[in-house]
Length: 204
Ligand code: 3PG
Image (cartoon, rainbow, N blue to C red; front, side, top):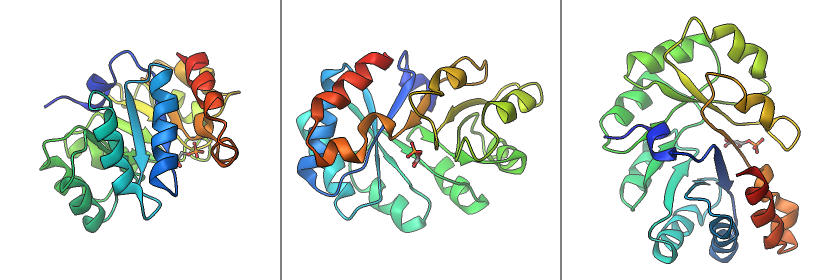
């Protein structure tokens, strides 16, 4: 099985899709696809999230589409019943990590401190999401732990934006950065799809 950073390949942006309707979700995904994005995360935070994942997979079979905000057994069951390419969690527990290590999908578990990192390593995962990155110590924290957890690679999310993403990507223990700043709610509300395309293009 591939690890999460392996399926990211050269892409160093993990763009988030959060939408209330399937149409908005598809429009966001289309805007990202136009920017040559190969992998997107749909967060399970609206009632249509699972349908949005299904619709994106149907329209763009070659796009890797993952489910984010997975932390309950129910949400894990729900995503395992549909076609998803990877799973992202906002936090970890022994129970959740045990269940995730039994799936055949690449997983990006979300950690926010040293204890989470050790627990996640104990369950066999070396790629981790640092969330919420800015509130968990940001680049100072990543720098402080880099020699302790030298085999761990991070994808920070939470508070990443146009003014700090470069600082994160410059860290040697960071393989990608994620967030919603590339598909701002205001742009979705105004159907400003080209702003999403241009922001993703500017990043790549
Ligand atoms: C996530 O699920 O990773 C976060 O909600 C991203 O945080 P952001 O909205 O600050 O980018």
